[in-house]
Length: 461
Ligand code: GLU
Image (cartoon, rainbow, N blue to C red; front, top):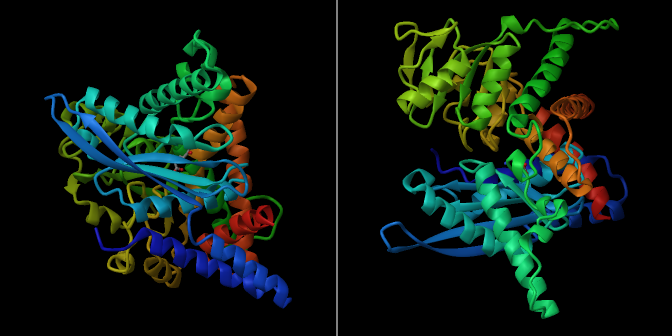
């Protein structure tokens, strides 16, 4: 891990896209107004700091620090996940909340950007301690969230169960507030308040708590749709085919290395594998495996669950054969000679230190902020397209928005309907970003920022 500050990186990305927007403006007055609005996008609207005392299983108390950053709500309620990680910092959460604002705008969702984080290694907590910490955080942010205010969701190391605990704390706090305001003795039951609309406060919930079909795998599936759309465009571009018949990319040709094997890394691996790509390497925080023949992600996950770690899981076909592959480090995985590199872990995976050693032909960013601005410049010069996080991983928040909509309307959509809507959205937005990159002759990240900023700036006026 380098010392790259994610918020500094995020602001450098904003500056780069702003230059393109400014070039298009001829009137001094409009340029001045544009500058003022961009200045507003350089700081979050609100930062909530929370201190969370938690009773540990041994009776001692531990105090945890957490944040919720509400970056921008010009297009709708703040939206974004909550992360549990020992390296969470305010600048990281600020960057992630800014990226959420951009991501929701690229995905054309009626939402702004927010993010939360707690400084904790959840693996060091028991289940009960995790629940107490989560409830403390849920209670601490209850006043600032709500279906029309701020809609949190899972992120690194959080999931539907955790969202369920937070939702319960939120609902309890609403019951309490109504009780106080109306001074009623007969407190309305939790049941009354467990309405569909209050459930829209959190997304990424379990189905039984009002979650959406398809939400768990949505980030991975959305990433596949984005990748296929951009590969088709690249193919068209390189072959310079101008005919109306679209040349379909032969997925089989492509080898893939995936850094990270959490919810996002696993699901993108599974969808790529099922679509005929050859996934030759995956890794988790402890290291990775390289299997030139390709792995079977489902078997590899089973094997990882059994062993507790990935090393030793070389699963291709229907068997896990210990002789077929080799163990590699995360750093080695990033530099493998593959067609597609998929960073799906944390920020700062591709930096100025390793960008010149990347051998992949395309980078699909499934993590948030995995490539630093310096690395972006190096990769652009080397003609390695980087499909940016705010586009590639926007499938998750898109289905979160579908979940929010279902809760607000008290509906439950089929998985087929959710996935059809996701596919249409991802293909459309990937097409818009591609077109912007052609129009402004710029990289895909800057193009995605331009698309997002145009939408946000319009909503700000
Ligand atoms: N944490 C996910 C992200 O970074 C999903 C956010 C959401 O669903 O609100 O995009």
